[in-house]
Length: 361
Ligand SMILES: *Cc1c(COP(=O)(O)O)cnc(C)c1O
Image (cartoon, rainbow, N blue to C red; front, side, top):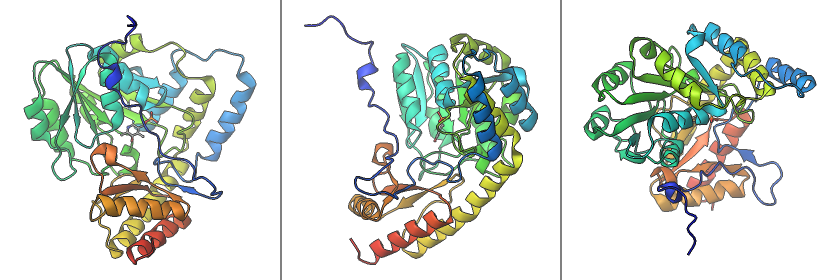
């Protein structure tokens, strides 16, 4: 028998499943499975990426000063307390590496993002799943689940894949009620889609136990570039910076993200288009007898009568060249998560769901 074994917890990790990208034999499949921006990045970001091609022989800066300054200026934050990572996934990872580990408990919600559990297990910690109330984060249930071992509490607000969010007073109540050794992590991957919401940045300013994470993968259309960031108290950012590799972000990624965050017109256009098509799509699905909770993000969680109907609809959509996301792994087997695409994609998917509900299979 081999003596070579990984640390406890590692073999409990089911590898992360990304959204399916293609259908065998279909050329013009529409991918609505990964919450990507259907318009992609703006011209300024693309131009910055092109220019970066001429400097690829140079190592990137290790301090990310230009990108942190741009983010700070746009969002009105303190650049010294921003940390940048290879997607916000890497910030989640830094938090678990630095604060969780063997003996620690990491809380996530029932339908929470898969990376919280994965990163907790990688660190050697025990993930603790807390029930939601009708697909909405339940602050009282989280507070009740806290113990002396709780080190991190992850909440996506708005949450993926439910699209729901809780209000700022509820979040503040959660931060105030946590045990002294625990950090509240507010994952704001979809915060940009919510009008007049700072993703929790204001709470970071007034609490010493709150960290916010953000990403360039969704609204900014840069999922392929892998850039995210975190904002927190100086003491926590200092800790995370020690875990971070010096050259974690490429020069191309840094330059592209900086141009993207400064391009407010493109961000606003994408936000407004998403809001308009999200309302339209939710209404069209409801007319076909497929309800959903009001989504605050760039996807809709469509609810079907049962698991069988959700599976059958998924298969029918695939036959029509439409790829959506099954979310059985998120304990929502009777649902399909549909990314809000451009107008043509939204019309196609609504039409196909209508045909399915009308008896086509
Ligand atoms: C997409 C997503 C992220 C972003 O991941 P990146 O690593 O930044 O691409 C983070 N949290 C949630 C809840 C998400 O849905």
